[in-house]
Structure formats: structure tokens, C-alpha cells
Length: 269
Image 1 (cartoon, rainbow, N blue to C red):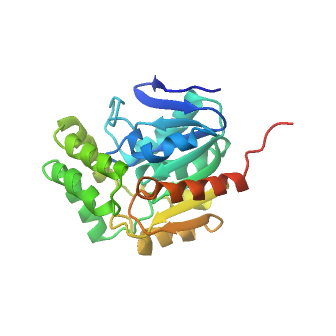
Image 2: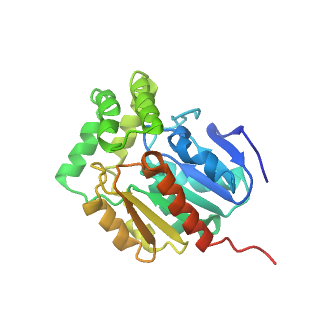
């Protein structure tokens, strides 16, 4: 299948489709949208069919239920079954990375390869981390977090990171977007928001990408935990923050293309 410049909706979830070739799915972080991948999506669409998802309550997607990290992870397999014929290369960042890990572990038939960019679900549970999630998930405080946090976790200034910051400032004035953002932060305190068990069950070829200057999911804690849980993964670090594909797009694309070329999708004879 090939489609260019098409947007489709599946039970209210917007999926933006471009390009032709093997299927690649882009899964963004809390508060973002498919535009987070603007610096790399066109380049990937030159050799793949790119399906860029807006999570419920984000971008062009409607919100029908209370959002949570585990809820989005549970939603993903059905969405993949609906949008096209797999298996897919899943590229997931933060919240999207958590959903991608769970899908690869529990529905390996849907996943050809896994690319995880500072994925969620590897944060050690402690009074500090739980307290931060609850604080950021407070409706009164969430708008301030939406405006200020990207200035901390996007460590490199690019056209895309400027756009991401601006979009979150705008979203911070939308009560529905604020509620979604806050609900998701609170959901990170759920004991089920732990990717380690699923990670050990992942058999798909995996590329683990980590920005070592990310203060939200630090390499020294979360990154090393993810590396231990994914011992067979190829790991690459960048001197950036939370979103290497937006902060260092050329280097990210080079690492992605090298990974994909070294692990082609098997085809039927």
C-alpha cells in the first residue's frame, strides 16, 4: 500500500500517512503530536510508508476515555491492525516508546523492528519520582509544566524544537489539552507503567536511542535500566535531550537508516 499526504481516523485516532514502502509508525510523547517528528518524517517517507499517530486528546485525535499510559499501550495493537498490513517498524518516544515496547512483547506478529527514543517505563519508583509525577499531573500546575518543561528537556535549538515548544505553550491554554496532559502524568505512577518485564520478552530487532542530556528520563537511571532490560538491543547515545529526532535529525536519520539496512524485513518467497 502507498499513500501520500493522507489523514485517516480510526475510532477518533488520527493517523497521518505518507510515502511508500515498508510500514513505519511514529509514536509521540505526552503533550506532543505527529508534528514532533517533522524533521525526519519526510526523509523516512522516501523509503517507507510512514504512519504518524496522534494519541487520543493530542493533535487531531479525539479523546473518548480518560487517558493513561497503559491505556494508550493497550490501544496500540488494535490500531495497528486497523491501519494497514504489518509487521511494522515502531518508532516510539517517551510515552510512545512505552506503548511500543509493550506491543512488541505481547504482539510480536505486529512488530518487525523497534526504535525506542528515551522510552518511558524505566524510571525507578521512589518517593521523589512519584511525587514529581503527581505534581506535574496537578491540573492547576500542569499548564506551567507544559510551558516550561520543554525548555529543559529539549536541549538543542532547532526549527522543530522551537515549533514543539510553541505548540505546548498554545496547548497550555486549552483546558482539554491540559487535562489530558495532567492525566497522563498521573498515570505514570501506576505500577503497571513498568516496561522492564515486557522489554525482556522483546524479540524484535531493537535500536535504543538516548539523549544523555535529558533531565526528565536521565541516561544514568532510566537509560541504563532500559539498556539492561534490552540486552540484545543496539544502543546509541546523543548529546541532546528528550527527542533526538527533533534535536539532531541528521544524526538520528543516519543511525536509523544504518539500523534498518542491517536488519531488512524478511519477505515471502
